Structure formats: C-alpha cells, structure tokens
Image 1 (cartoon, rainbow, N blue to C red):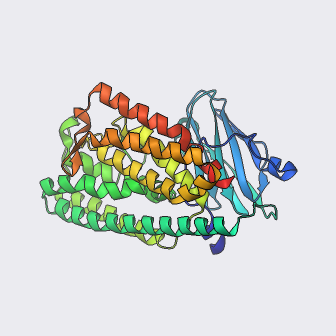
Image 2 (image 1 turned 45 degrees about the vertical axis):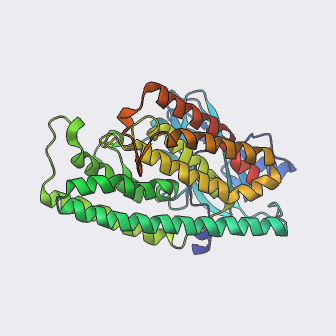
Amino acid sequence: MTVLLLATPFLAACTENADAGDSAGGATTDARKLTVDSSSDACTLSATEAPAGTLTFDVTNSGDQVTEFYLLGEDGLRIVAEVENVGPSISRALTVNAPAGSYVTACKPGMTGEGIRADFTVTASDEEPAVSEDEAQLVDDAQKNYAAYVQDQSAQLLEKTKEFVEDYKAGDDEAARALYPVARTHWERIETVAESFGDLDPMMDAREADLEPGQEWTGWHLIEKDLWPQRAEDYTPLTDQERATYADDLLANTEDLDGRVQDLTYTVDSIANGSRGLLEEVATGKVTGEEEYWSRTDLWDFQANVDGARVGFEGVEPIVEQKDPALAEQLTTRFADLQKLLDEQRRGEGFVSYDDLTPAQVKGLSDAVNALSEPLSRLTAAVLS
C-alpha cells in the first residue's frame, strides 16, 4: 500500500482544464471519461471504476448550492484532486492521472461537511500513454525540482513558525505581528500540498467564518484575531495559558506537516493541478480580502499563492513548450501581467494593507487573476497530452 500512496498525486487541485471530448483512444479512453452529477442530496457518477491513466471527471451541479467534487485516497482524507466552486447549473472538468488503486469520491453541496461519498476503483491498465526518453527526463526533472521546492518551503515555514510562536508566547505582539505574514508566505506557497492532508489543514488554517457547528477553532487565524482584535466586537483577549496552548498546537502541527512532506513524490499532473489550485485560492480568498480578515495582510498571501503557482508552471514548462508552445507563451505573459500589478502594491519588503486598495485596484487584480485562470486551466491537459 505504501507504494500506491507515494505514486498517487498529492496536490489538491481546482481545475477546469479538460474538455471531455478532447481525448482519443477508443473504448479505454471512453472509460476514462466520467460524468458527475452533484445535486443537493446525491453524487452520481457514470461509473464506479475506470482504467489507470488520465481520467476526466465532468462535474455538473444540478443542485441549488455551490458544490465541490473530490477524488480522495483510500483513507478518505488525502486529497488526490479536487474541483471547487462549481455553481448551480455550471459544469467543470477535473483531469488527473490516477494509478491503479482504491479511492473515494465525494461531492460537497454547500462546500461543507464530509460530503456525499462513495468508493471508486482505478483498475490496472496496459494502455497508459508512452513517454519518450527526452520527455521522461523532463518529467523526472519536474518531479525532483518540485519536491525540493516543497521541502524547502516547509523547512522555512517551520523555522519562521518557531520564531513567531516564541514572540507570541512571550507577549511581544509587535514582533509577532511583523512575523505573521512572513511565516504565512511559506504556508501559502505550498498551500495545495498542505491541504492534501485533510486532518492538518483545518487545524492549521481554518477561518472563523468557515467553522462548522461544533468545530474547535485552532491555528493561524485564531492567533491572528488575538493579535489584531480591532474589528472584533466584545473580544476577550486570550490568556497567557491560552496563548501558549494554541501556539504550541500550531507549532506541533507545523512539525507534523514538515515530517509528512519529506517523502512525498509528485506527478506532473499533480504539479500542474496544484498550480491551478493555488490560483483558485487567490480568486476565492485573497483578492476578496477574506483570508486575512483581521490582519489585512492578504496581499502577502496573494503573492505567495502566485509564487507557488508560477513555480509549478515553470517546473512543467519545458514539457508544455514541446506540446503546446502557444499555451506556454500565454501563461508566461499572463503571470508577468499579474506580477506587475502586485509589484505596484509593494512597500519595502511587504505590501500595503488590503484596506488601502481602491475598488479599481481590486478589480484590476481580479481581472488579471481571471485572465491567468483561463490558460492555466488548460495546463494539466497539455502536460498529459
């Protein structure tokens, strides 16, 4: 079972990167194209198994709430791939290269809770696409380089979190506030990897507005509120003991995360899907100012998500240049356009407060994110073609 886990894509990914009619290859290819109907009370797949290789899940929301669709590992916790924010009457496609093994599918109407789940099987197949020797080297380079990047960012996250926890527990709020967005940068750059661990992510990164009934609030954003309580009504500051408890918990979970990423391996589709997923994080939380509700340091997170998305793209860029050079060029241009707008909001080593942005500037950033999202949604299909 360990071999399967290490071979399976580990990045959560929000994708709209495939057209169900693009593939070729006869009956086996058709078996790799699945439809998903997500309603208010059901998650209906056209099949409960498919042959190993490039799978496309065409997800349609027939309900009246925004939904998500997940392909999970056999344990039901590890996210293999996901597509989020599928509005009513909207269809989006998820592309993933899945090895043989046991999986779980889940639709989440309202994007909360455990979702509507079912077992899903990927069977062994001898019809997986062949890879040329030259392309195999590019794939190997992309996988090794991305693994090294994640490990480096995780190590820096752990180092900065230790410093942050020390300052916070000591009551040095000024130093803790200064370190907060710096440490969070390393989390946000690999956020889709962290999210793949379904148990750790909510304990470390849950926002108060997203808590489910009965869910205990821990992690970064609880401490953020304690450091920046100005927007809170009738807020009672945490006691020294509470500070120590929550800070130690955050550090322990960060150490756990750092240990888990050391042995992860990545497929090119998981890297590409992760790139798209990071930009989705920007669109749904950072550009709207919802992520860092208390500190207003959303632009730090915005930049970090873009950093991670760009690194993911650049890792597979040599493959895309061979298969779809026009897409590679378009992505390079769109990343540069977005970065130019972000650079306008820099102040020293950081950024202006989100509250300092004008409506026109927010719209400009949002438009640039949307312009990048469209070609980035085609990245996974390109690397797997």
